[in-house]
Amino acid sequence: MKFGIVINEGPYTHQSSDSALQFVKAAIDKGHEIFRVFFYHDGVNNGTSLGVPPQDDRNLTKEWSELAGKHGLDLVVCVAAAQRRGILDEDEMGRHGKSASNLAPGFRISGLGQLIEAGIQSDRLVTFGD
Amino acid sequence: MENGEGVVKKFCYINRKAPYGTIYALESLEVVLIAAAFDQDISLVFADDGVYQLTKGQDTEGIGMKNFSKTYTALGDYDIKKVYVEKESLEERGLSADDLQALKYEDEDDDWAEKDSLFIVGRNDLATIIDEQDVILSF
Image (cartoon, rainbow over the protein chains, first blue to last red):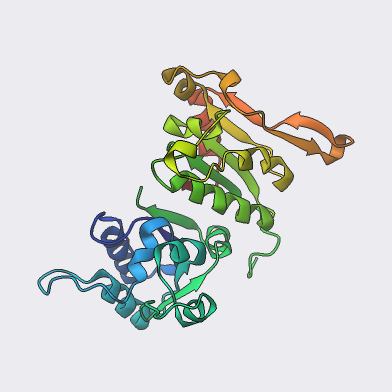
Protein backbone atom coordinates (compact mmCIF):
# COMPACT_ATOMS: atom_id res chain seq x y z
CA MET A 1 0.00 0.00 0.00
CA LYS A 2 1.06 3.58 -0.67
CA PHE A 3 0.90 5.84 2.36
CA GLY A 4 0.98 9.60 2.67
CA ILE A 5 1.89 10.89 6.13
CA VAL A 6 0.94 14.23 7.70
CA ILE A 7 2.61 15.43 10.89
CA ASN A 8 0.93 18.38 12.57
CA GLU A 9 2.85 18.77 15.83
CA GLY A 10 6.41 19.66 16.69
CA PRO A 11 8.85 17.24 18.29
CA TYR A 12 8.93 16.44 22.03
CA THR A 13 5.86 18.42 23.21
CA HIS A 14 3.64 15.92 21.41
CA GLN A 15 4.26 12.28 20.61
CA SER A 16 2.98 12.64 17.05
CA SER A 17 6.40 12.82 15.39
CA ASP A 18 7.58 9.76 17.36
CA SER A 19 4.46 7.83 16.41
CA ALA A 20 4.78 8.83 12.77
CA LEU A 21 8.45 7.81 12.70
CA GLN A 22 7.58 4.41 14.16
CA PHE A 23 4.66 4.01 11.75
CA VAL A 24 6.84 4.86 8.75
CA LYS A 25 9.57 2.42 9.86
CA ALA A 26 7.02 -0.33 10.39
CA ALA A 27 5.33 0.35 7.06
CA ILE A 28 8.65 0.20 5.20
CA ASP A 29 9.58 -3.01 7.03
CA LYS A 30 6.32 -4.55 5.83
CA GLY A 31 7.10 -3.59 2.24
CA HIS A 32 4.74 -0.63 1.94
CA GLU A 33 5.59 2.56 0.10
CA ILE A 34 5.73 5.99 1.71
CA PHE A 35 4.74 8.48 -0.96
CA ARG A 36 5.59 11.52 1.13
CA VAL A 37 5.81 12.82 4.69
CA PHE A 38 4.30 16.30 4.95
CA PHE A 39 5.01 18.54 7.94
CA TYR A 40 2.37 21.15 8.74
CA HIS A 41 1.39 23.45 11.63
CA ASP A 42 4.04 23.12 14.38
CA GLY A 43 5.10 19.91 12.64
CA VAL A 44 7.51 22.03 10.60
CA ASN A 45 9.66 22.30 13.74
CA ASN A 46 10.67 18.68 13.15
CA GLY A 47 12.81 20.04 10.33
CA THR A 48 15.11 22.29 12.34
CA SER A 49 18.74 21.28 12.35
CA LEU A 50 19.38 23.39 15.45
CA GLY A 51 17.73 21.17 18.05
CA VAL A 52 20.11 19.75 20.65
CA PRO A 53 18.17 17.27 22.78
CA PRO A 54 19.98 15.69 25.76
CA GLN A 55 22.33 12.86 24.78
CA ASP A 56 20.26 10.21 26.51
CA ASP A 57 17.13 11.27 24.62
CA ARG A 58 16.13 10.59 21.02
CA ASN A 59 16.91 13.17 18.35
CA LEU A 60 13.82 13.13 16.17
CA THR A 61 15.11 15.44 13.44
CA LYS A 62 18.26 13.33 13.09
CA GLU A 63 16.18 10.15 12.96
CA TRP A 64 14.00 11.58 10.19
CA SER A 65 17.08 12.70 8.26
CA GLU A 66 18.70 9.28 8.59
CA LEU A 67 15.51 7.47 7.59
CA ALA A 68 15.17 9.76 4.58
CA GLY A 69 18.76 9.04 3.58
CA LYS A 70 18.32 5.29 3.94
CA HIS A 71 14.98 4.93 2.15
CA GLY A 72 14.81 8.01 -0.06
CA LEU A 73 11.83 9.42 1.84
CA ASP A 74 10.35 12.67 0.59
CA LEU A 75 10.18 14.89 3.70
CA VAL A 76 8.33 18.08 2.83
CA VAL A 77 7.99 21.06 5.16
CA CYS A 78 5.16 23.48 4.36
CA VAL A 79 6.65 26.79 3.26
CA ALA A 80 3.95 29.04 4.74
CA ALA A 81 3.93 27.26 8.09
CA ALA A 82 7.75 27.18 8.10
CA GLN A 83 8.15 30.89 7.38
CA ARG A 84 5.92 31.76 10.35
CA ARG A 85 7.97 29.58 12.64
CA GLY A 86 11.48 30.36 11.45
CA ILE A 87 12.33 27.21 9.52
CA LEU A 88 14.32 28.29 6.45
CA ASP A 89 16.42 26.63 3.80
CA GLU A 90 19.16 28.56 2.04
CA ASP A 91 16.86 29.84 -0.70
CA GLU A 92 14.35 31.14 1.83
CA MET A 93 17.16 32.66 3.88
CA GLY A 94 18.32 34.62 0.84
CA ARG A 95 14.82 35.60 -0.25
CA HIS A 96 13.94 37.03 3.15
CA GLY A 97 17.33 38.52 3.96
CA LYS A 98 17.87 36.35 7.03
CA SER A 99 21.26 35.61 8.54
CA ALA A 100 20.96 31.84 8.79
CA SER A 101 19.13 28.79 7.52
CA ASN A 102 18.27 25.75 9.58
CA LEU A 103 16.56 23.11 7.45
CA ALA A 104 17.94 19.69 8.34
CA PRO A 105 19.35 17.30 5.71
CA GLY A 106 16.79 15.20 3.90
CA PHE A 107 14.00 17.76 4.32
CA ARG A 108 12.81 20.13 1.62
CA ILE A 109 10.53 23.16 1.73
CA SER A 110 7.56 23.30 -0.60
CA GLY A 111 3.93 24.36 -0.81
CA LEU A 112 0.62 23.00 0.44
CA GLY A 113 -0.05 21.59 -3.00
CA GLN A 114 2.33 18.80 -2.00
CA LEU A 115 -0.09 17.83 0.77
CA ILE A 116 -3.04 17.71 -1.61
CA GLU A 117 -0.98 15.71 -4.10
CA ALA A 118 -0.12 13.26 -1.33
CA GLY A 119 -3.85 12.86 -0.67
CA ILE A 120 -4.53 12.22 -4.34
CA GLN A 121 -1.61 9.85 -4.94
CA SER A 122 -1.65 7.79 -1.75
CA ASP A 123 -3.96 4.92 -0.98
CA ARG A 124 -4.20 6.22 2.59
CA LEU A 125 -3.32 9.59 4.06
CA VAL A 126 -2.50 9.14 7.74
CA THR A 127 -2.38 12.13 10.07
CA PHE A 128 -0.35 12.35 13.26
CA GLY A 129 -1.06 15.16 15.71
CA ASP A 130 -4.03 17.18 16.89
CA MET B 1 -3.55 7.61 -13.11
CA GLU B 2 0.22 7.39 -12.95
CA ASN B 3 0.73 11.07 -12.21
CA GLY B 4 -2.68 11.64 -10.67
CA GLU B 5 -4.05 13.72 -13.55
CA GLY B 6 -7.76 13.35 -13.89
CA VAL B 7 -8.14 11.64 -10.52
CA VAL B 8 -10.94 13.18 -8.46
CA LYS B 9 -11.10 12.14 -4.85
CA LYS B 10 -13.48 13.22 -2.14
CA PHE B 11 -11.52 15.48 0.20
CA CYS B 12 -13.05 16.45 3.52
CA TYR B 13 -11.64 19.12 5.81
CA ILE B 14 -12.92 18.81 9.36
CA ASN B 15 -12.62 21.92 11.50
CA ARG B 16 -12.99 21.26 15.19
CA LYS B 17 -11.33 24.17 16.94
CA ALA B 18 -12.26 27.74 17.82
CA PRO B 19 -11.01 30.33 15.31
CA TYR B 20 -8.61 31.96 17.75
CA GLY B 21 -6.59 30.51 20.60
CA THR B 22 -4.78 28.13 18.29
CA ILE B 23 -3.65 28.44 14.69
CA TYR B 24 -5.46 25.35 13.41
CA ALA B 25 -8.48 27.20 11.97
CA LEU B 26 -6.36 29.70 10.05
CA GLU B 27 -3.94 27.11 8.71
CA SER B 28 -6.83 24.81 7.79
CA LEU B 29 -8.31 27.61 5.72
CA GLU B 30 -4.95 28.05 4.00
CA VAL B 31 -5.00 24.37 3.00
CA VAL B 32 -8.57 24.60 1.73
CA LEU B 33 -7.82 27.62 -0.46
CA ILE B 34 -4.84 25.85 -2.04
CA ALA B 35 -6.79 22.61 -2.38
CA ALA B 36 -9.48 24.39 -4.38
CA ALA B 37 -7.02 24.68 -7.29
CA PHE B 38 -6.71 20.89 -7.57
CA ASP B 39 -10.18 20.14 -8.99
CA GLN B 40 -11.03 17.67 -6.27
CA ASP B 41 -14.44 17.06 -4.70
CA ILE B 42 -14.22 19.20 -1.56
CA SER B 43 -16.39 19.20 1.55
CA LEU B 44 -15.86 21.22 4.69
CA VAL B 45 -17.14 20.15 8.07
CA PHE B 46 -17.43 22.35 11.13
CA ALA B 47 -18.00 20.56 14.40
CA ASP B 48 -17.24 20.95 18.11
CA ASP B 49 -15.75 24.42 18.77
CA GLY B 50 -15.08 24.61 15.02
CA VAL B 51 -18.62 25.98 14.57
CA TYR B 52 -17.39 29.25 16.08
CA GLN B 53 -15.22 29.75 13.00
CA LEU B 54 -18.32 30.60 10.96
CA THR B 55 -20.01 32.97 13.40
CA LYS B 56 -21.00 36.49 12.39
CA GLY B 57 -19.62 39.66 13.88
CA GLN B 58 -16.21 38.42 14.95
CA ASP B 59 -14.08 41.21 16.39
CA THR B 60 -10.45 40.41 17.07
CA GLU B 61 -9.22 43.89 17.83
CA GLY B 62 -8.86 43.22 21.55
CA ILE B 63 -6.65 40.16 21.06
CA GLY B 64 -4.34 41.53 18.36
CA MET B 65 -5.12 38.74 15.88
CA LYS B 66 -6.02 39.00 12.23
CA ASN B 67 -9.77 38.56 11.72
CA PHE B 68 -9.96 36.07 8.86
CA SER B 69 -13.66 35.25 9.21
CA LYS B 70 -14.60 37.10 6.00
CA THR B 71 -12.54 34.59 4.04
CA TYR B 72 -15.18 31.92 4.68
CA THR B 73 -17.72 33.95 2.70
CA ALA B 74 -15.34 33.83 -0.28
CA LEU B 75 -15.25 30.02 -0.35
CA GLY B 76 -18.03 30.02 -2.95
CA ASP B 77 -15.71 31.87 -5.32
CA TYR B 78 -13.30 28.95 -4.93
CA ASP B 79 -16.06 26.60 -6.06
CA ILE B 80 -16.52 25.16 -2.59
CA LYS B 81 -20.21 24.32 -2.41
CA LYS B 82 -20.49 21.84 0.44
CA VAL B 83 -20.01 23.21 3.93
CA TYR B 84 -21.54 21.06 6.65
CA VAL B 85 -22.10 22.37 10.17
CA GLU B 86 -22.99 19.89 12.87
CA LYS B 87 -26.36 20.71 14.41
CA GLU B 88 -25.58 19.27 17.83
CA SER B 89 -22.35 21.27 18.09
CA LEU B 90 -24.32 24.47 17.48
CA GLU B 91 -26.99 23.52 20.03
CA GLU B 92 -24.46 22.53 22.68
CA ARG B 93 -23.01 26.03 22.40
CA GLY B 94 -26.32 27.89 22.38
CA LEU B 95 -25.88 28.81 18.71
CA SER B 96 -28.25 28.55 15.77
CA ALA B 97 -28.07 29.10 12.01
CA ASP B 98 -28.83 32.79 12.62
CA ASP B 99 -25.49 33.20 14.36
CA LEU B 100 -23.55 32.03 11.30
CA GLN B 101 -22.42 33.94 8.24
CA ALA B 102 -24.32 33.19 5.05
CA LEU B 103 -22.19 31.10 2.68
CA LYS B 104 -23.23 31.19 -0.97
CA TYR B 105 -21.95 30.13 -4.35
CA GLU B 106 -23.03 30.98 -7.87
CA ASP B 107 -24.26 27.96 -9.81
CA GLU B 108 -22.80 28.08 -13.30
CA ASP B 109 -25.24 25.38 -14.43
CA ASP B 110 -28.22 27.49 -13.35
CA ASP B 111 -27.51 30.91 -14.89
CA TRP B 112 -25.21 31.78 -11.99
CA ALA B 113 -28.03 31.71 -9.49
CA GLU B 114 -26.83 32.33 -5.97
CA LYS B 115 -27.31 29.26 -3.80
CA ASP B 116 -26.60 28.27 -0.22
CA SER B 117 -23.46 26.25 0.35
CA LEU B 118 -23.91 25.89 4.12
CA PHE B 119 -25.87 22.91 5.37
CA ILE B 120 -26.70 22.19 8.99
CA VAL B 121 -26.69 18.45 9.47
CA GLY B 122 -27.24 16.12 12.41
CA ARG B 123 -24.48 14.02 13.90
CA ASN B 124 -25.69 10.79 12.31
CA ASP B 125 -25.91 12.31 8.84
CA LEU B 126 -22.50 13.85 9.31
CA ALA B 127 -21.07 10.45 10.16
CA THR B 128 -22.43 9.15 6.85
CA ILE B 129 -20.93 12.09 4.94
CA ILE B 130 -17.54 11.54 6.56
CA ASP B 131 -17.74 7.83 5.86
CA GLU B 132 -18.10 8.53 2.13
CA GLN B 133 -14.83 10.50 1.90
CA ASP B 134 -11.54 9.34 0.41
CA VAL B 135 -9.21 11.76 2.20
CA ILE B 136 -9.89 13.42 5.53
CA LEU B 137 -7.84 16.23 7.00
CA SER B 138 -8.91 17.11 10.49
CA PHE B 139 -7.82 20.37 12.07
